[in-house]
Image 1 (cartoon, rainbow, N blue to C red):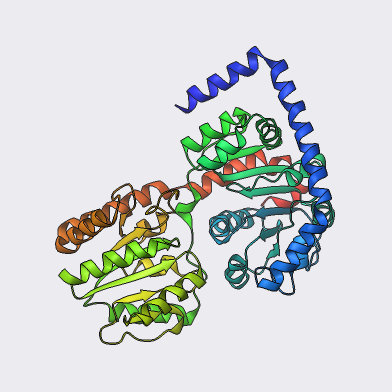
Image 2: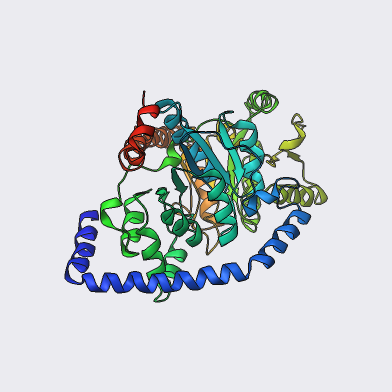
Length: 450
């Protein structure tokens, strides 16, 4: 299937090299318009950042980093910049970063993130040798300031962080670009495929030396957006190699205490829940309580504030609910546990034999990562298995009343996870080494290699 996609795309270029040049020229025109617009809007973007700081959405002291102003010194020597927008993307980058540092101990690594939640977890969990900064907004001045100060030898972008000024300025400065765990959502694919933006995305993707899609489907989408076929390679989905980190000692001890307290409970977890999905989850919970009174439902919303709102609402309704951040023991009658902490999901999955993955229970949502649940040996349920409240209730009841089925589903999930996760980091390293690190100057390479 991938081969067919490559052949078709190559055929178009072979038969119409002039068309490819015209596309690139159109892309350059669209980019110049984008650059002018982003430059003109820079004062408003600056004000917007200040407003976000006021709302608590930007760091109160380090928010100028978003304008390209550094807060840490640039160490001498080669520097590799990894950029991940949020905590999820940051977590999948960590194993690759650590492997790069092990293989190239003199390499300096800069990691940037965008969200406060990512900063709160990663700032406490990253190895000290990794420099953590907030990413610059995609305006010409901010990107120029950032690149001029840090002078990275290469940039590794995670998943779908495709910003025109960043990519074009990096290319203009001779900085090698890679895109790892690359993905384009269906919505973004339609957006980029339009007649105006297709030339721009084609131009941007042509600046990369390496693109590693997370799946065959994603690889085909990238080819349809005219990414050069020879730079697309596969190593597997990095979500399968996320490490355990971000759980402090108090949290880890509390999880072990929870495990003891839950031994007599029938536990299931609904994770990565979007706003509105909790109504379905709670409806299923109350229905199950009628048949399985010792049920305990763990709810893990996408956002901390959402969890606290759910807990307050349930308390007003007279429900016996416990918040994770309170680190309290279960009281008699507690049957709902709402998680409002960050970085603990992988550990929390070990408390439950069943995981329902959110982002799949309402129209317009595309689901979330199931790998952490599978790694813990959970029987995993998503919209692919259930299409509504009644089907979810039926599936859960079947698992709770059939121990053999529950054990088989959990074992199968873990076996699939082990199969899919094998060798991903090593394959990714090999691709980076060949396509990125070998492009460093020979002098730098000599000082880097073991």
